[in-house]
Length: 373
Image (cartoon, rainbow, N blue to C red; front, side, top):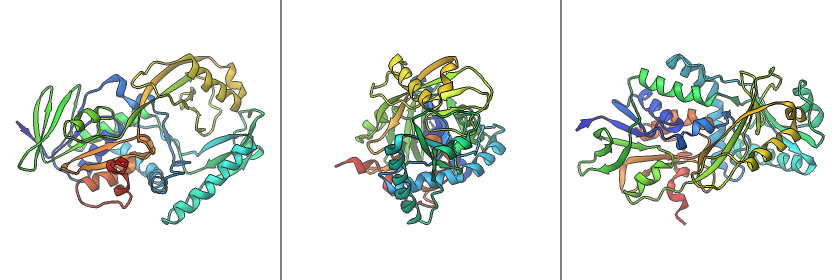
């Protein structure tokens, strides 16, 4: 049986981020196993936003956690490119969440006030402000706003990336730092041993290690169930659409609309409770297109060339799960949504917690057990 120090089960954004963080922290011999199921490759369906607004409106700890991670993004991206050679296409040019009508504008303004106080209580700034319709229009002079747009919530301290190069960069940097990556490998079981180690059984042999991090998205549910642990996540489908390439005119991303470096417009603001069905639907595409055209009427003139779906990993309160199993202290689990935004804190703070070097005060709030009520 092959022996290593730590095994990360799951090679998506969260798994790759924690694996990279572990080798950067000097964890020893670290392996990352990835089954590469197409229905669970969430980076293909991630909108790519690196922002904190308006995350955590009903969860102060998650609001602070998201703000911390966003603050780390520019430096994290620069270091990741240095370690991997990948350009993750980070554009740190702000972001907005448009309002339709005065009632929505006021609701957004109230949330900004609430979240500003939440973050200030923890010594963090919350650089978000409301901009009226005229100011919003002046910020994107090459795009005409729809008649019902009343303004927007805006922050200059956020941006967007390309999730696919990000995933490649994390895996590449992990390997360049001495980690070992196995793709196309299925993990059938994680078994604790009496000597405090664990055995990971795979389709290509068994491995023994001191610690295991289970970060396999919905695949984690099956592995933890065998250990008597219920993982409190559920699938939620999101659909995306993309246009033909055109001249770049949108200077920063909106929550539901962004323009990529190559000129395509992307839409991505659908949520559907459909289990693990990743098919696209005309209903969702029509709804997304209608909302986008209400924001920017000229989008109706473009050719929409592709649509696809992906299954998100969601928790009951929208916040992530970082935990170690109560009966098996050397087995950890990471699960949740917003993997792009949270990549820096996962790589830095969650990795340090797993290695018992340091524990950010927020981590204890994200236990899987919080849902056992």
